[in-house]
Image (cartoon, rainbow, N blue to C red; front, side, top):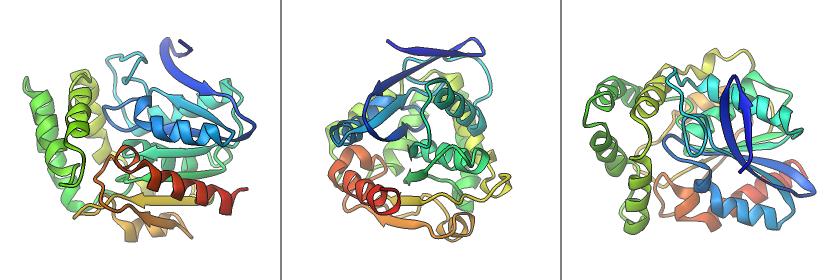
Length: 261
């Protein structure tokens, strides 16, 4: 299994060679690289080079006792792209991974050729931001796994989502170490997209899931990303890349073809 070591932290990844533009798929909170398996299969078949990292604290990567702000993940991925000589990739991030993709585009403006954000809370609505401190307290308690299941199970899925897939996702996420789960979620409320040093200027796509409440404040995101392309899935909750992969793949492929190819 391939690993890179940064500051004595082992970072696991999978890489699929290809002759077309590289795509880096960034998974979300308490997930891992396998949450982008349908997209890796689809785009590798089209000839794209694919990078599937496990973020530090997740998957097969090391899980040190440390803070887990968005910038730590972004710095890891920027460094990993340099170490692997991956030039001008498209960064596709789901949920927290989408915030990381945005942060990379804002802090490393010469690295990405484009970014795609899947149902990512880049700019948290104030109502969502207000409930995070109480939820993080629950994540720091002995019942942290139950707290995670209660929140994710109630607000990240819609009735049309496959119940067996939902159960598998919740079981997987519950295996995340408590220190990673609690700190990474708490840092989401601290992330200030409007305080990054640069505006995002690369081609950008936001795909929202078919949910009753918006995951991000779209009016404020439009200010941060001029000329933002926006799409929305049909009949899928937050884990749209797994629930409706054909819809996600089609939108990503169209976005790449019309803005980069």
